[in-house]
Amino acid sequence: MRNLLITGLNGWTGCHMATSVLRDEDVHVVGLGRRPEVETSLRPFADRIRYYVCDVCQPANVLVALLEKERVDGIIHLAGLTVSDDWSALLHVNVVGTVSLLQGILTLREAGWGSPPVLVISSSAVYGRTTSDDSPISEECSLLPLTPYGVSKAAQELVAHRFFTADGLR
Image (cartoon, rainbow, N blue to C red):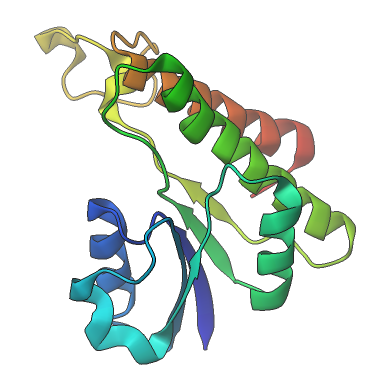
């Protein structure tokens, strides 16, 4: 049995991701979200979902306690704010939330827990306006976001890259 943590479980992408991974009957999902209960579309899988009301922006020690309890094999980080003109809110949720999650994983690794791989989901908004010469967009394209959301996701990518290169998180 494999345990996958999905942050932002109740979001549009989180629901679809959970439905996809739960097709494998050897997978259990540990889901994090801010709503009081699991989205209706995921209820058929209730026996294989352990859901926690948890905001990834909480201090890392909250996430450490949850991760220590659940011992997940991998993490799919989907929690985030997508629609807002409030720069502060976007940066707090998308960047600070990612830092908190990754610091929590580092804390557990230092305690001998291991280091599960983390998939941090970004957005094409990090590339801004592209031309036909840029198509298809590749990960080698420059980060030139035009919206507050795009800036927050580009910063999130840079945070994840920093934890990968400086700390060796997978």
